[in-house]
Image (cartoon, rainbow, N blue to C red; front, side, top):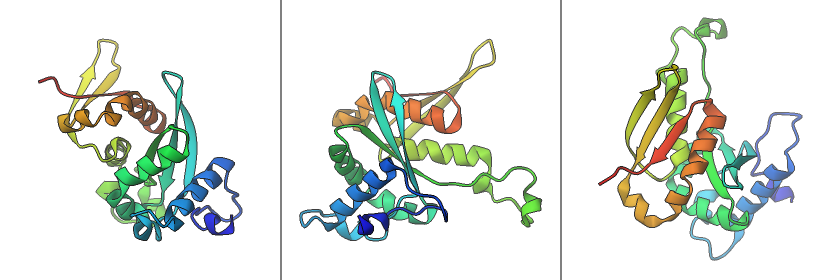
Length: 193
């Protein structure tokens, strides 16, 4: 338990939730298991939070937040780590997202002279979109604006991943998680041949 707590990075005074403890334990178990091929990559990885979200079709998804400084290491083992955690969480969908900071237009109050392009709202939402779909590649995006002014983002995913099977079952999960994180509607689909 104490070693599993090292996998959770929280602000001072904040205690981890039971779900975060469970994710930390699962990461630690994967790291110490002798048969795991990603144990060396997991050594430096820690989480900053975890939430459970209700998804359509009576399923739930676990959204795991990582500090941005370890995100590069997570991306290397993303697919394998998702599969391992989905086994541990009784076949719930698992989605990884990096923690990113959005600076508003009053960024000079924080002592910055220039607002980095990666800290704008648009850039952060684009990055979250990339994080949510995970190892699958986005090949196209369309924004559909209806007569009443509501916007719908259509995201086309790589058709090579349709054959894998597990990505197709997660399309509703991707939409629900993206809506919860950014408050924007998005539909994920594969392009028609």
